[in-house]
Image (tube, rainbow, N blue to C red; front, side):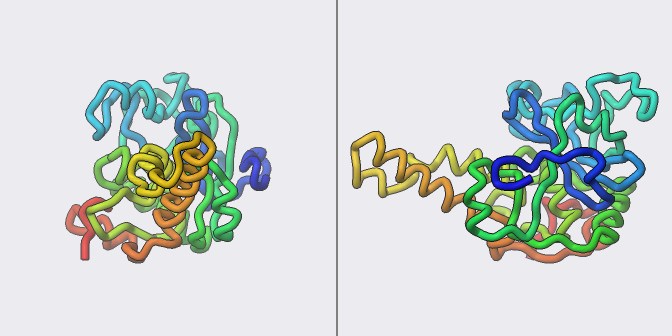
Length: 245
């Protein structure tokens, strides 16, 4: 495991690890927390259900199915479940490979990863705290699923760090969402694009803006975050999207 790939074997994972598996030809990854004994707690909008972006493309591209085989002998039929659920690792992976999300990486390492949603500069809390948060949210929920502000990666990062975004003007903690938005706006939103008309120059400017946008959006760098106890998160029916300063 390193800059080129975070892929690991099942024998290497331990309770409290943030794991993920790529979906739909590496378009999107589904994230969760491994809690031991072959179980993963993760956040899903449910198979066949559209999410907050409000188009049918959400279901086609971004859906995170609990299982490809609805009659799993361990989990049973999870095809209609949504919210925070517990699955066996086979159902979580859904036939994909296993990857480990990395914490406390250096800025240089972070930027060397061209794809978001694989690592963060933020440090992880202890495995006991991580498992406690995931287990608590399994029974109490994590609010409403939202593609950009409250998705499966946001859930896993919160379980690992206890950090929540406390403003309502930006994306959540998800590196994947930040990468998609950074890529879309890299050229269009940058005034530096007027400094060059060559393809190479535009590509360099675009990639530079993409990297900068990813970095400043990382949960370990941004300042609009706060450590929130999981008990406070769910008290008075508060979801992560409703915590504010």
